Image (cartoon, rainbow, N blue to C red):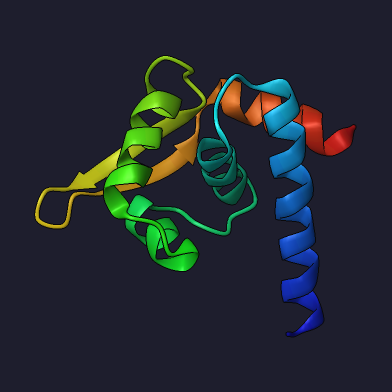
Length: 102
């Protein structure tokens, strides 16, 4: 594994743990939020593929993170593939910035 990949995975793992301790959502949602924040994933289908998770489960977390919690923004949807393209909302950016500085 190249050194850059190891560092990115370590950053992702650290942010996931911080999110799990700070946000009232499950590990899958925290992993998705961390992946978007760190630029590891920008869409639901890519995240599902990269982590070996059913796309339907990822879409459920997208709905929670972009709806009730307001931490993600869906920038566009692909109707054919049901892929949601994602970005941090201002609240999500504030949260992840705060946790990565801590």
